[in-house]
Length: 268
Length: 260
Image (tube, rainbow over all chains, first blue to last red):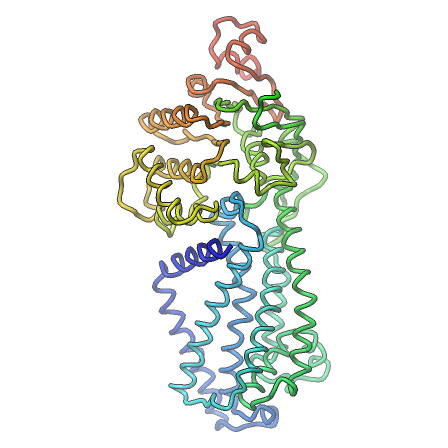
């Protein structure tokens, strides 16, 4: 099993590194993105406003961490759909499914690859933040951050698999990705704490796992919150994970069966 | 029939035309197209069976159904003692499908990297992979510099598809239009390889619309038209069934499918 996962990871790495310019542009893109928020923050004199008091940091520090963390969320969701769609368009999905390899192994390798890729992305944010913008991460509660990270990865990988199921059946229309792309950025507290929004939007935000993930990570890293202090947040993420894991695997199996019935595995 | 290695029993497959609503693709349930209807046959071990039919006759659908990529609506497929649908992984280990799709390899990887990758997924370890690739390269007389897959000629891509299907040394080989878009020399060399594989005991099901090529290569013929088997048997059996003594396979095919 591990040899197969390793082979799938190696294949992804070889393909990814064959696009050399994309690798450099990714780092440069993060830098430019951070500069935008750095100057926005500077415009407001780097003040810790009312809404940021709870986290004890200025706006730039808040956004930098949420964006670093959002890598796991965005990559967790986007990559599954992107990868399945790539395999469809390359025509290799059928070749993969012709081999006696369990679907679980293929999905596990995708999840692992996403994790490696997101960690790499998050490291760029953290390194640029620490060494270039002198943000202090030394107060972080690593245990809390680690647990929140793990639950977030499980939760959002499940959402990613659910999203990929839609791609297999509907090819392009993907309501899960639509919700993530259009609502999570607005409601999830990535660019601003949710307390900025009116109460009804805050209620909506509480239906999304990202809201708990971002808030918990900010508090664990900047305010040294323990797991006991973050019990609401990790409890919510745990519940989301328990619901989403079987739902995502079930939907993926169903989607594959439907595509095999339609004979549309490599249609896109 | 008792001697058969693969049995296809009354397979029927309907497809529903896809319609797109913006980004969403839906399959219309009301206007079904019959891709396969009541298809039954069995394969004898060590023989080359030609699956003959025009474009759209259902050859590729049948091969994909046998290899578990498409689920039939009705009927069942048995390979040795394994049934498709319940023992898919065992069936995949016994089968090798060389599709005519060029888009079935990772074009950003080299040919060897592709083969090593698929070999691992077929369960071969590193040493066996190397040995097997060397064996197959020597069999197919491939002596080349390892380059990215997208730089290969059509003939080379076809050879790699065949090599990939043979990596795990399957007992049954399904070949979908293996000679398609190949030049004369490549066709002759590929035919030679297919015959050699048959001599080593492989059971081969070869889908083609090239009837003269099939006549020189296959032992048994299945004529498929509009998703239905019209006739099957050896050339002499087909001559007898159609009352066309000394006729070529092309003549028989034309009579059977009424494609005069």
